[in-house]
Length: 498
Image 1 (cartoon, rainbow, N blue to C red):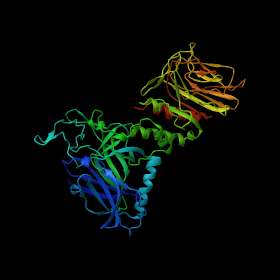
Image 2 (cartoon, rainbow, N blue to C red):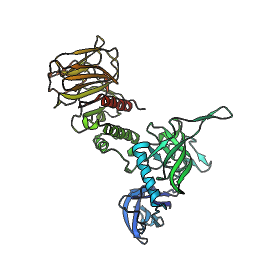
Image 3 (cartoon, rainbow, N blue to C red):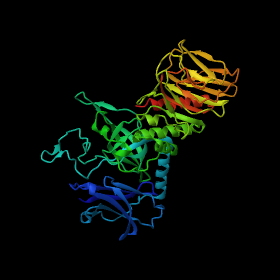
Image 4 (cartoon, helix red, strand yellow):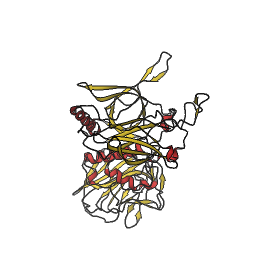
């Protein structure tokens, strides 16, 4: 066994990025760790960190000032056998490969990265293909082929165990969603390619895989670089969408499928939420959650939220969490049925969800809920004694109160959809989906301090219980019509994701 293709380089000009590969080996890799060494003098290196043997890269975040080319950093990698030191192997010592670019080209790349991340681009997951390392155990040396032709779940048809390295996040723009197709002379339809634009770092190679926010996977089939004033500053990739039945879609994107977290960028609020989750979503799901929170923050809605619930998860304990804070997590009463990737189905008799929320500002608040099914019932979707909504009564009407002793009714023949009550001073608004159905003056203002329930009306005890299914809900300060439309669109897109 030996360490090959050791490449120290920089990605963002303030971080050293090291990458290497293992030659083919029959050694027991469980007996090894990688050790990273760094120094300012080639023959005086200190160890920095020890890594799991299945990791083939390292980000040195402890260096800075790489614009100063008078300072050179030297690196070396050791594959250390923890049982027998005589079997340990070292890479050659290499100096950090600083980009041979002028300051203005570095600045263009830096600004392009900011633009792609914040304005023009989308977030993608990059899976870099292995080109060396432990051979796939399904490779038949005698036959010169896989024993599982075309469907190897060990190497994903790369011939090297694992197939691809740990997923990392990049930003770029793709030339249109979906497949481009062309007809061959035989009449077959084949995937063609579309263009993907990103900056010059990180470097991407042919056969690497990109995963978009819709979980489509794209193979890099061509690569050209774009130059400005004779300096390479962009990568233009030719990518082809991979069919959903391809083995590539079995490459895991879950955190626990890889040994370390490479420091992907999530919103701080998303990180706090993940820490409270019983089981971790897959990486692509985490990115969607983080993006949803970022969009709510950008729209100015996040700061107005007191509670935000998404019920569409695979893990029930994750579905009861309040995304906004550790307060107001839902309490499940009398075993509401949890439907994976749908939400909570109530029984209409005893089950309901308690938000533990009673508004400190009853004159200015909003509550909304996403109803999954169409059921006519006298059961209430959310509320308490004087603040509640039933999306479809037995008379095909919405029945609603907004801090009032008087109920209002609006014709409605289908309970499925999004509903909200928004209280603004002396009036309240009633919404369904993107439509403001009506605005009512509060004729006899009355406020109940009872906790707000989902799937029941709290009158000191659960009353008018619902047998509908719910996918999401929120409680906030008063919102504008535009903000209500935005929270509907963002939440609806998330709960209806593939």
